[in-house]
Image 1 (cartoon, rainbow, N blue to C red):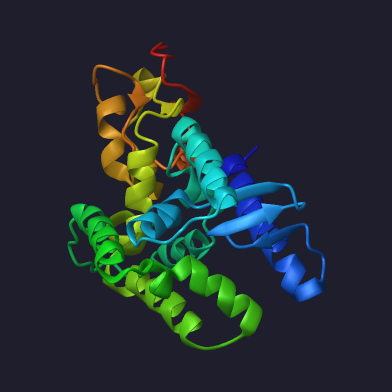
Image 2: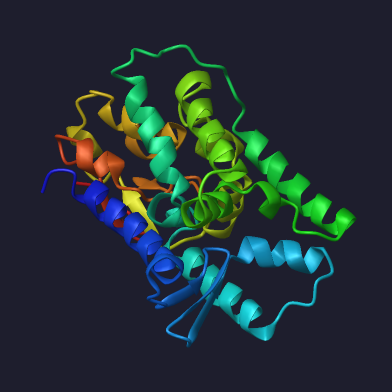
Length: 266
């Protein structure tokens, strides 16, 4: 199926968003809360481990359900790939993908060089600020949280922040937010560094150097070691978001999903 993984990602992102919004907008409370903290069917607690970590550093007394929910989420993303959150769950990915898509028809090529390490520094800053100020500072400006609030409560500062992320990716640099600045992505990259689910360039010998995979990948630097004769055909970098874009666009069927112990080459 053409664009199979894109369709599945969009179904996941929009489906999760619909579940969270069905309660406040339609009175159907299958899930209560947000991506930061939620309860599904009054039984399953899920919490963002990054938010819970900030809460603990801030000195907050975290409920047992929040700690359990963070443990469940952390275990899942540690196994499946931390940045799976970014490409399959985070609704802001819809915003940044729209900006990346618009850059091409609009002919926007100019970009500012941003260091990818900036997101790691920002991650550290949010944790230091939480400990220093006794507050989960990141949630004041988190585009994910603000997007949820904007959809439920309407226009306001929330939409201004989301618009700023969109314009950043459209006018300043492609993938500027997710690829270079977002501390959430940095956290989940660290969490999923040893994940089982991996993309493999198993059929790298068939590569015709069309560069389509590099053009669509939000983290193109992770492809080269696997594709160009590295020790392993696996994309092992924690920054890989397991989005499946490279699989969708490769006409030579070079890439596929597998596990981190599958080092076969075709």
